[in-house]
Image (cartoon, rainbow, N blue to C red; front, side, top):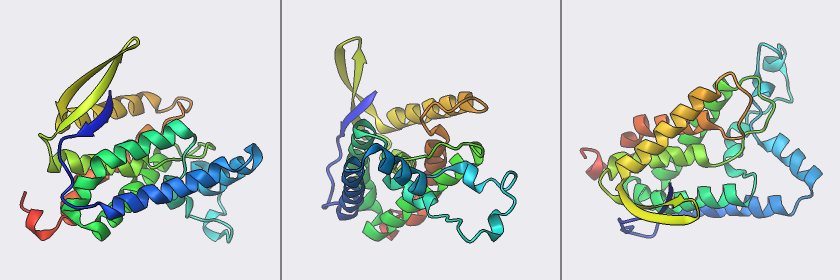
Length: 227
């Protein structure tokens, strides 16, 4: 099911949400200007490669002067292609504006980053031997979706469900749509443990979502904290 829009208009212009989208867009434009070799080097430098931080196989990590932990942060601004980029930014447009309204711009930014870092850590822990760079904003966005689900559980989300070649459109309460999405990630993530990478960082999504569930209330404006 692909979300088309929600039914709650933003109370004010979501400046931080659009700045995050702009940052992702700028990085993606830079990516598509690189040739294949340059792009591979870029992803290997700024994407999160769990095996690089595996103390069991790299015993000198703690004393290594060249080790950088920036990929735990920078990977959330990288995307593997047009579809990956567009889908992530579209979901952020739908759900991010209302969450920013409830948190305020600066708190929303901090919440977004913490959810993204939580996603990176979860992906690292469950894929510690992987040499494939993890890319994408979806872990951080999963945290935003979790906050939206609890803040606006009965907001309607218009979704599109393709039946063969025929698109079917219908509305679902956000807690059903996002809840089903999370369960699908949990199911797929559980099946992926111990198997070869599917190309989708399910546990990053789960990590970001769980962080959003536990942390969103701490970032709300005072007038919304009792909701």
